[in-house]
Length: 181
Ligand code: APR
Image (cartoon, rainbow, N blue to C red; front, side, top):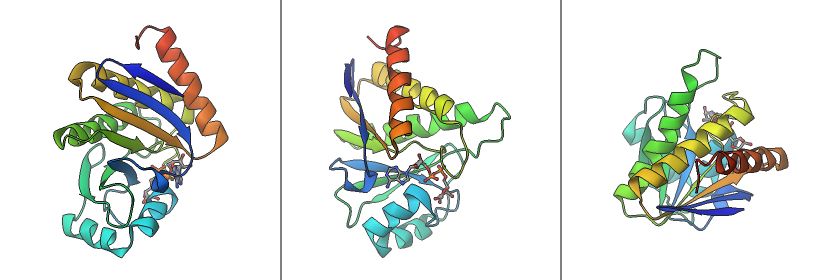
């Protein structure tokens, strides 16, 4: 599923983010930038041990922000580590989640990258409800592309069938609402 937007394109695919042939992949990291489970574990396994060393040198990252390392053994040149919010239902999580997408795209654009792949940040171990997270993520991506015009291909890589279907529905909804031309 792919939509051309002013300033780039949004693509939804099902699959494994570590196999994506893009300039950067985004990691759903923790604030300590330590290897973890989920997509973080998969990325560290695919990138090799140098990734954990590069992350340890950075030391940490606040929630809602990102830090960039090389991709090492990954096809992607960079890993953009984004620390998503743990979902607690406080109402604060949406702007922190949107910030992860916006800051990752800002870093990709600042490096003149042409393509970046995201997992569904916070929707696994961090417990963010999938439907709301999909709406927040896609609105943040579409808004960044429209405003900053970076000419970026933004690919959301969904691991499960339901993850893909929920994101596809959210993208159709955004388009119907006229948020996306
Ligand atoms: N490719 C793409 N998506 C994946 C992959 C993969 N190889 N593996 C898992 N996912 C999906 C999950 O199905 C989920 O939809 O990534 C999404 C994010 O889930 P988590 O990896 O659990 O990340 P998150 O919910 O943000 O929790 C972050 O988990 O692994 C730890 O160190 C990490 O502490 C941090 C926390």
